[in-house]
Image (tube, rainbow, N blue to C red; front, side):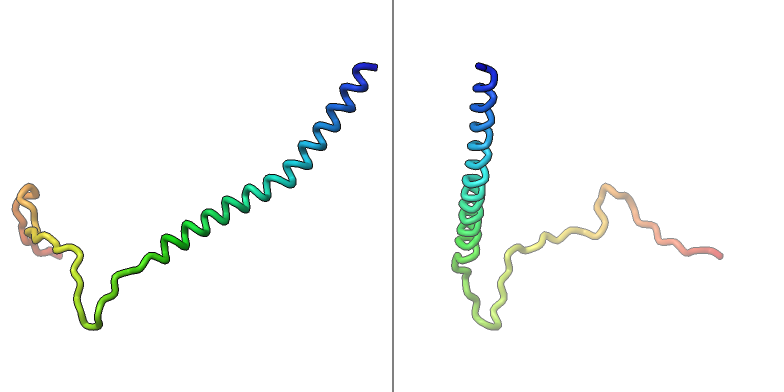
Length: 82
């Protein structure tokens, strides 16, 4: 008799947990999606500096290097013989 009551209670608890998961998990995921959307909107809505037409903006000035590094050795020009 005790085993039957235990199985009935176990089945009821299983179905209640299953029902709660079906109701609660979508709400949690929706909350995460909304938070991610708000974060992306805040990231892209930050004001960007405006530039006037015709102005040139240089972020980084490239360093000038010789075309062949010293560690590579001497360059020898060659002709292909056929």
